[in-house]
Amino acid sequence: MIQVYKTPAELSRAAVEIFVHTANEAVQEHGRFTVALTGGSSPEQLYKLLAKPPYRDLVPWAETYVFWGDERWVPLTDERSNAKMAFDTLLHHVPISKSHIFTMWGEETPEAFAAIYEKRLLNHFHGSTPKFDLILLGMGDDGHTASLFPGTAVLQETEKWVEAYYLEPQSMYRITLTAPCLNQAKKIVFMTYGQKKAKALQEVLEGDRNPEMYPSQLIHPHQGETTWLVDEAAASLLSKKS
Ligand SMILES: O=C(O)[C@H](O)[C@@H](O)[C@H](O)[C@H](O)COP(=O)(O)O
Image 1 (cartoon, rainbow, N blue to C red):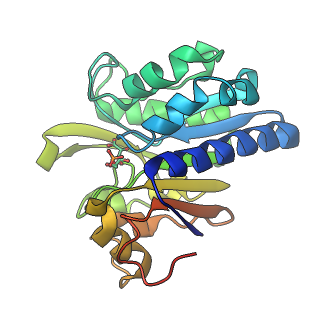
Image 2 (cartoon, rainbow, N blue to C red):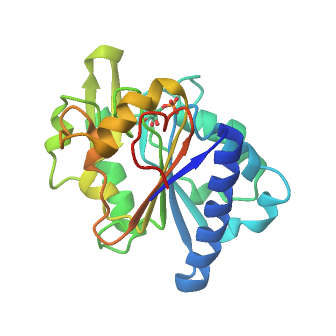
């Protein structure tokens, strides 16, 4: 489903309503809400809305568990850290237990930590496949999502849930949930805005199937639903708009 909004602010207000509704529905259904946050700039307005009334007081934070869809392999104090952005804009401002927050950072090598994070997921999901109640994703202007970048080997992964690898163009390690893991989610929400995303969005949603070049095409939850929250600028090249 694609929902087009005039501005990123309107898009973020739609995202916060989905977040609050999904969180409460999950807690009512099975006693807890497990969400994977995204990095980048797209979710910042959403996180800031969640960090203050009225929305802050509508989320069942005591039953909320926070993971990440991906991370740059940098310390939590580094300005490039997705976790740092989430703490600064959201997690330091809400009553969530630190034991419910699973950052993608450790003293191990990135590869070793990926295996540790996978074990943490397995433990959280009681030994079964990780079924997030909600996964938030952004999309780069090259069509990547999470740290699933064009032309990378991680796009071919079919077994692992978490992968770490050295991303040449950015000269840094990345750690990411894989497409098989992301696609177990009950609900995936993309937040994508801005003219520079328009071409990639058209290719991802309406172009030929080419996930090697447009990895966001890999995201199709097996039993879940995907909602694209986009603004008019990002949607400007789409032929079909809801
Ligand atoms: O670690 C990251 O950078 C993100 O997880 C990444 O996948 C992001 O969602 C896209 O690059 C879009 O980034 P913007 O929201 O900044 O456009």
